[in-house]
Image (tube, rainbow, N blue to C red; front, top):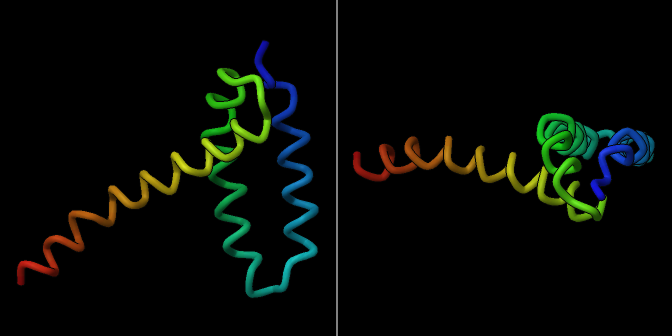
Length: 79
């Protein structure tokens, strides 16, 4: 059984947590929330554990970002 119904609850908890953070940490949390919003529907539909689904959603986005940065880093190192 998937945990799809848990996604809105997790997002709400993360948004409350964001408000408790220092102002300088809030943009980083905004990016994590955006990653969960982007990837959450797929991961929450396929997994039974909301924590596992949330972590995988964020890790997917982080990995995509690393892949996007890798070609630029290679180009800079070969110059």
